[in-house]
Image 1 (cartoon, rainbow over the protein chains, first blue to last red):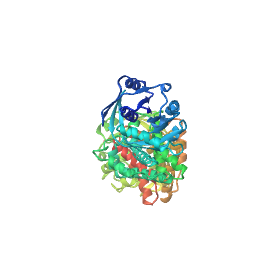
Image 2 (image 1 turned 45 degrees about the horizontal axis):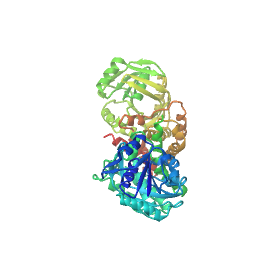
Image 3 (image 1 turned 90 degrees about the vertical axis):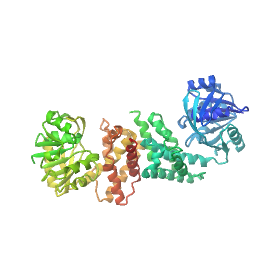
Image 4 (image 1 turned 90 degrees about the horizontal axis):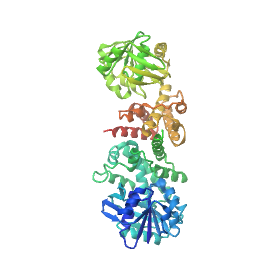
Length: 306
Length: 300
């Protein structure tokens, strides 16, 4: 089986290096960062932290080099989905492509270029330390399922899930993968921008009663939209928020969006709160707070272009 | 009215002190001794729309000063401390507040039985040093009665200010103007502080313009519930201000960038409290109020 990781940043690298441990899988990685690609080809892709892994795989910054693949796993930031899948889609003419990205709308974008699409959500996280070297911060589960309008059949989804699980990335194939996706989106949309706008770590956000209620109000809007779509959440995002606030979990964690804002990098706000607002509009569900937060973070991004 | 004391020599206080010194005896109450010394030594220079240096008498001790009119011009975040220092001083003076938001008059009135005037000011400037202020926008200060004063008292103070070269107008009821400015300020200041944007075209169009519009509408509902018929329309004030050519940097944006305490309590806090008191839901203002307070909390 041949798998290509599209976007070999932190999360993509976790999949790439682990899958490369399996004898029956040939792993490719497409990434636009030439130094990262060169380092992977020269010395392998190294993970350290929650697991120490060295993956031998073939990386390229030139999509023309990609051979036909059975599976793609798209792991770019959400705003790069369109560009990344447009130039790699030729490798998946006979394959299925999964997304393990944040936010809403990635499946729809991939489906424009690829026939069979797999909806996915992943909780492991890490960060790129240096070209060819990624820190694995958190282990966690991944859920994959057919993307309803343009599905990969469930047994095909199960083959990819099985490979990931055998590689040390526990993954479930389910008929409806929207529950975990919406749980994670609602969690991210309620916490990430609040951290980004205030500069507070997750634990400190949760310690301020008024701010914690704003987070809950954002969660509640997301839940109503999910319900309007007929999505059954697999668990309450609120418990994820409280769990993460514990001193021994992520009290001191700066939300990735806060890190983005501090580094003046484009954020994923369009796919988090923006996604909730768009789906809300389509289903006649008002989401005034998510809309406000979306506009404020877009304003932050606009302020860098002054 | 021949003697005026200005308490608080920030941008607005410095402008009042320097201009009024041309038509009255002006003293300045400062927070710092060294600032009082600098003013006594160098006077107060105005540049921009005017160019002159005024002689003023300055002191950091309120007991050393007296006046018929006391203009309390410090920032809202310094008001409680300043008002406490005024207790027992300035017997016989009329006190005028110029702080943003609502409630400055009450804070001051708790510390003495002076007659009190309210005002809102739309003039703006930049303070370059303790002894140099640049006069930028020559928009008016509006004055009205608060306690033990009348519209005529307000108009007399306005006349004095106008004779000094600044713009001012007295009213029988200040609340329409005060609420228009409150809604405008609460909206524009908090959005600027959270986004980092100066008050430019983003506030009048697109998604951010929609947010600004909704915030203004929440404020209008609160004003209506408080029985206030607004003066200028805060949305139109916003649109007009974004078309001035140069984008103004609201003070709350400058405060968060310098990691200083903001005027969030007096401005957004008073709007949210007034609305809640009257059972008017203001979820967006409540959210922005808490976000800015949380941003302040992130400094430590």
